[in-house]
Length: 281
Image (cartoon, rainbow, N blue to C red; front, side, top):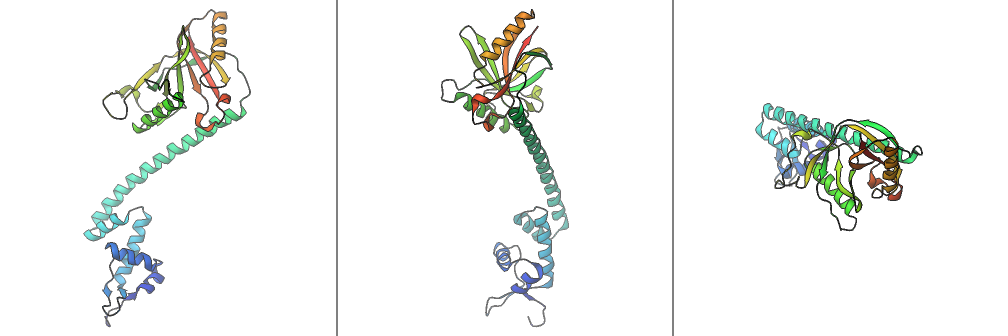
């Protein structure tokens, strides 16, 4: 040991900025064991080469590799192993970037929704609008009879949609049935980013049971904004019926209600801003 240049654990910590606690941990997990351990006092001594190894470890940590991955690469003592790990890490980072873009878009959309909720004080009258063909992912059966069944159903739809890997592009949409007994909610749905034409739901496959693709035809829709509980759209529907009759139009299909703001962000649900749409010909 007298003829070998070594550094004590304190010297290594001072030279590299790696704490002595971290060096002891690296020793314990086998990532970097001291070149020499003095049998008389147990003091650790590191070689100059090991200081370079510490720099490699620090660099790979900066690139996002775990200590386990770094240890495997160092154990193989092969540049190819490091190359393969970094190539795999590049794919991980690319996915994280994609996820961050999706999160940013969600934040931007939520801000836009809240701005509408906070600032809209305009027209609550019926206006016609042209809508393209739309495809939604919908929940077939609602939790009717349960307390808060609508929120339970919406949460189930959102959970299953995310589990299938779809990016949700809209706030929940309610599809109503206009029956002789009155208005009732038939389905809850969301617009998603992805090719729903290739989605084939299966009641036996875990995750998508109870989901189906719902197509809303292109055409002219009568639109009416309203504020109030999203389960009570009678006033808006009455306005649409009167407008359609006055214009000699026939209502087709089921009316739908589009939530213009994330309902989970509004504490007083009776003040929700929604848009009711009903197709006409």
